[in-house]
Length: 267
Image (cartoon, rainbow, N blue to C red; front, side, top):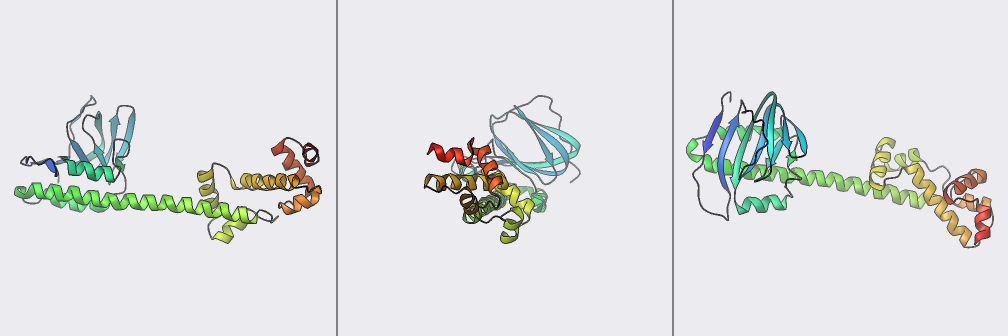
């Protein structure tokens, strides 16, 4: 693994399969000053060191354990930093295109970090019998697709989980806003998550903080009660979770632009 290796694979004209073209280890990557394009797909695994992937309007940092793809006719250049070494497989074929489409791998979604688990599988493939390189390269490519599929599902599940948690938080606030003591700490204790996590997930999902959303939902309900004919400011403030009617009037005026008493007169 200290010297460059390149296995070339005989071409087979079957457009409905996967055709792996070569399987390469680069321990001393060539320096290319210009951004270039190629007619094939490539999947890369970063073995060690660091580098940069230069594209038309973007620079992506590369490190050990990263997997990324390059695409036909898409300009790119790899810059080696800190003893960069990597392996790659060049490939073509409609089946590969179909798999990448299913995994939503594209020139906008092509980089996956933290893939150290598959290093040994790639490395062992390079030291196998050169006469079976076509089978080995295709196996590694398919295994990598399978691994990335699981990784993408996990990422999606975590995203879905956060979105679900945000909805749970919102429902809890909607159901309990009349409680004057409702706060971030109360919500986090009730849902068994840290206040920092609760706050972060909610704001990322709804683009508003929990305290601000609580005031929004309370004032919205105060307006609804006033429109229904309630005239007692203290009663409305109590029903909307404000123990102090003066504070309620202050928040109401800040959000609506007029005091509750003036708002009543406009109805």
